[in-house]
Length: 465
Image 1 (tube, rainbow, N blue to C red):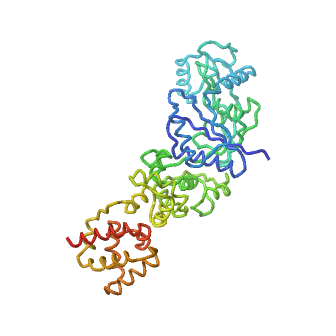
Image 2: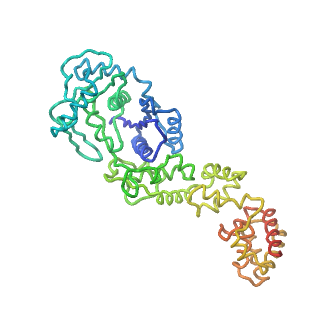
Image 3: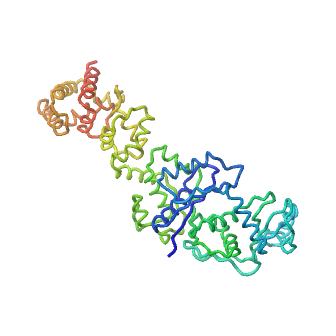
């Protein structure tokens, strides 16, 4: 069996968005699943809108997602000599011709065709004239006039187009630049692409591309057109649905594995399973399990899946992802081991890394600010005695570990006759400034003796006032 070769060909006219990232992912997963090759090609023939900034943004997004490529990146703007060679080949084989019809003439013929109830297509005026190459002439493909062009789509099934409905489309503009449908076919042929997975908005381009393959006597690739990603209102995904650039999700605190997991589930399934690690996706991905209905983008589901991935990720692997958010919040992360301990107390309660960094603030603060409601409820004079007593016992404690800390709290409970909650809640507010936090013993152990005693002293002074 031939090696599977897939490709991802973004246009560098903006950032990489959700739909494009999913297309890249499907092609990458299929190549990895089959031990094939994945090619990256930058389709930058739109000279006006293509920018280097967009190219770099695409690279950055793919690298963050962990989507690597085996060949490329190729740039269409560097391949014009090759396209010219193939245009000449078609003209010489009488499969393409020069056309000098003006735009006004073409507009008039299309209007006449529509008025007569037909398709607004080119009428073939220059098709058999044998015009030579002249300045301002376009090159048109000599499309078959009878029969049909069939797409054997592995996702959508059998799709048939009557050739009489198609026309002699332009493959080179009057300035000599080649058109999209033509360069795509030349690229796919010369790069050995044999499997094309793309959005179903490309279905109407496919019969033209198939005709070009036939004209060039080349074997057709396998086509699979994936249903579009829609918003919750079932309209085309846009920014108002949350369709931001992929790197925006990174900057909001999403893990790349979570974004990959969510993207693949927008159109692909493996039974009822929702949670996948990337290695598992590579193992299980297949074209047969891509659905025929549109994927519905749901920001809340993405966030819930991100929370699952945060919980499932080992602290030492989560730390590099969390570090930029701690730095952005103004915290000096310190040693990795310290951060990893903090992560173990927060990873079960954080939906995003940004949320985790915000929740971690009390671990780093030099001075704790109390939430007004929390202080009013728990830092009362009646909490003075147990907090003072706890501070004394903690200062005398030899081993600042969870088991020993539990024993200290138990002794304070025995001496004061108070239940754990009556002691722990004022201490929690004293140490974190709020009423909700990770376990009190975990917090004390991680913060350490010096900071804990300093914060308890501040709470005692606050209650005395």
